[in-house]
Image: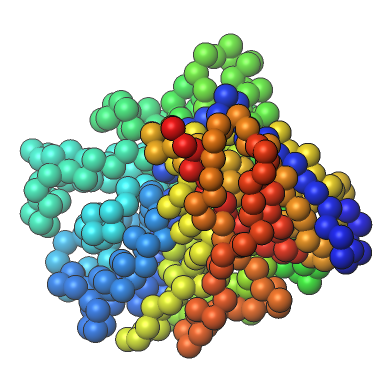
Length: 511
Ligand code: AHR
């Protein structure tokens, strides 16, 4: 494929056969992230006085959209924020909580929301909490105290404090992040790999003494572009391999003006996952371990980080809940998000958890107006549809695609695709992205291995103007629409995929 705007579309082939599997569809792939950053918490999930606020001050319009988005695990409270956070500030009577400077985002946190409010919100949202501990300015003891506060039912100082604060039984939080992005020089309390690895190991050891079956996440690399990527994983995992279950990976993608390059994001994420797997398995092999550490891809998204939206306040200005990182997403950005989710699913054998960063207002699929409306960004749609319909098992699709070049990225597939098959419901679903900015692509899928199938639904998200963005006033004029080209003929499914598009085709397998 030569990015020439050819009218005759090229063809990409996949095979969908339930005999060839990658692994289960994991609900945790559809996680997200709530950080004390900008308006994610204050005027995002929490706004007492808002017309939709419930008795706890949570916006029910945001709760509804959160449920519709279909997110599973929510990481909290940061992010960079956690590396300077004292969790004790956020518990107890609200009027007695201290107001603190948040150094990470140069803002002021009134601490009106803390661990107890977050735990309550997760129950209302129907999501699993994933807690991060501060290994920047704090250490093992404070992490153990927080674990005791959250998970011990009662009879100890911290658990009784929680009970006195209104939560009779422990929250049973299973997933814990041992710090955040500790490889990054921007991180408060940034450490080298050995310093961090030893601290993470000590903390993990102590946490397992309280609760042996926690699922612990060691910090991996903040991006594949970090000079330390690889060596960081080697050293950290050498210290922690037997004590942790997952190592994190973070990656954001920005449109710097070359849309074709922006659309190579899924290919770049695939490479990052492959490299991280290699670094994990190197340590496993050196240690002759039979244990398998996997990946928690707990920050991923499109983030136009070099734009004005991400400029943090400075000087004497320490605002409460300012507008920060409120990126507006285009249809093309949403196609990238859909592709990244396809990539995470395709790697379900090694990516066991993931978090779209973030949930509300801050680089988010859900936006709010203080006192006003909540609305969906473009990126909401591919995420919600994938979360709703991907089920059962992820299949290996043996993809053969024309390739593309963009900037320094050579020979990446024009088609990104994954298929899932749910043996219980008899539904197979294909998720596909055409990454070309100029050419339509014909998807040609061999589906005979499924038996007799019929198309239940075929939708595509694309627009004549790929830079179209939703706003509070118009978030619905560009939505995923039916793709009438999806057809079955003699064991083959074909569909036309427009340039810069995300599609979902659902097939029912007749018994
Ligand atoms: O999600 C925004 C920020 O990106 C997080 O706080 C940090 O972990 C990452 O650098």
